[in-house]
Image (cartoon, rainbow, N blue to C red):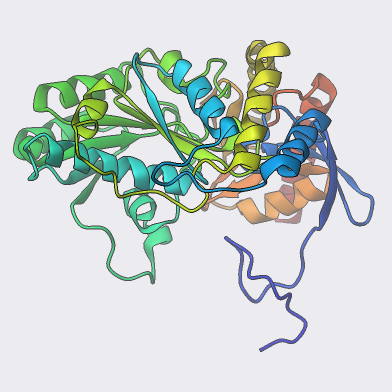
Length: 411
């Protein structure tokens, strides 16, 4: 053991690492480290800070709530006003009528909740044999055992032992394989789960009509459609939900991240009338929930974050952000510096050639004052706060170009 390694084990990092960038402050689309260096936050921290950093009104709302009652559970007969208010607000925005909201603390918890509710819906409806979950490869649905199993990134499964049973993966755009699977096993399928735009699996938008085909197959075979909106929800594609952007109606929606813009941890699941009908039968007790489901201080942050999204009309910024970012990335592609450009709305990525390491590009971007996200062996992702200005977008593009040219010169 190395005594110089920090006490905290960092997620998605080599445990032996001891070299970290300590972020101490943020404002708008920028953050500062402990050495005073400024960076463009080109990934909205981790896909979530849509309203930008340093929003005092969110801080004040959380502090005021904590002065009244900081925390109290929502199990059984207990409730609190901030949780009820946020649940009602999100349900009113749902991409289907008659929604209710189940609150949790993270996207991973939201996905596990949705998978459980899907299976439970069928069990309560007299079809307990429907346990199969269909997911895509690549895809990302979290790190708890349910979400990890549904995640279509085999490297994320390594070393963790047996995973959730009855989860089947298909290629992310392979309609033919999906049809064959539903034909063969449709009577056992509980749900299909899909991100509107695959995020941590490489920023991959759906092909035209793909999500509508998922809806059709689920309807034809009696399965539920879960849209994982943890990244796409709350404005990332210019609408409240990716479902609206792509004109598809799911049965359940998972959310987290931008519901509070990351100021406090909140996630949840929206359920439609079909799920409600199965669960709301007299005498039934829903034996699922988390200690911090509906945490009052956390949910207070969510209501204010949504106020900001609406009041400042940040969704209207998405086309401008997406156009400037994608145009700049495509110019780098024309220069031969990147192999591919992918994305939609205000979430984009570049695919790198086989000789270029994403981690090396990440380091080069840091030297240029830009924080982006390396993904897998060939991708750099960009998902900036919706308050970002043109100058900071240009710094992202210029920084990426400089980092790639420097790497090419050293080869």
